[in-house]
Length: 138
Image (cartoon, rainbow, N blue to C red; front, side, top):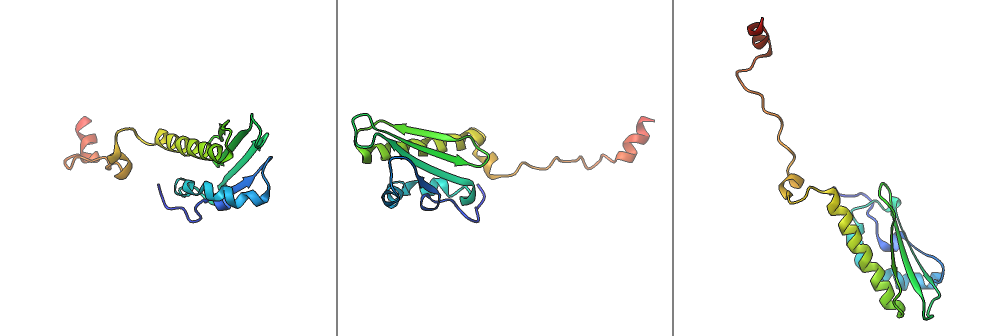
């Protein structure tokens, strides 16, 4: 993947939604910091993350992490873990897996050399002169 001038980071792209306050944002960004290496391949201005929680600290709480990257389908991960910290880790790990899966679907399978080396230019036979070939067919 080519180098990105302004790579995406969790700290730059994360929004907190329902159930979280802006005071929770820094704590959540620290939990999601391991996503930075995966997001670095995308432009920061074309990447958004939003985390929200429904029924926080209740028995049926549900944490949702949504990821929008320009030119790709939205990725939504959810967790019903009762512990908030465990639920955040769960959605983070699931997002990392799904980003990795999306990346491998776009690359040639089992052909690493095709990803690293551009295909060779079509070779022209040295004895083939277009004018001569046309004259021979007349």
